[in-house]
Image (cartoon, rainbow, N blue to C red; front, side, top):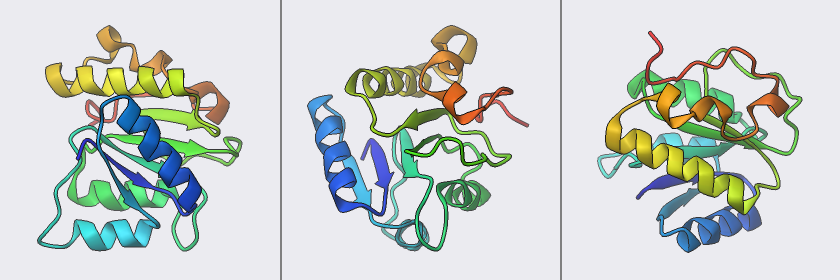
Length: 151
């Protein structure tokens, strides 16, 4: 799979999967952070080629908490964080991209292009322009640093 989608709203997961399919990407869907972590620790786990797209506000565990838990085992895993409430304070961990719901198709297309370029050529944020793609400013993320280059 190219992207793993973690969102507690079924209609949103389905919409995202359709958007990814339209852009010729494959998505695997998860209804909660707990479901994702259970899959991640199973023998069947295949990490996504590009990223994990996670909602922020989910029961039991937020998207930020999921990102921190995944990065314990996969420190450089790329994330796309999305929410309809970007004013919710972010965590210390940096996401590759931040998207405000409802996610606009053109914005998602730009994010996937950036992730594909990173996947092909390595983390080159100054060249790819990751810091300017997405809705980072809506999340009040001023000091963005490429998670793959972070120490």
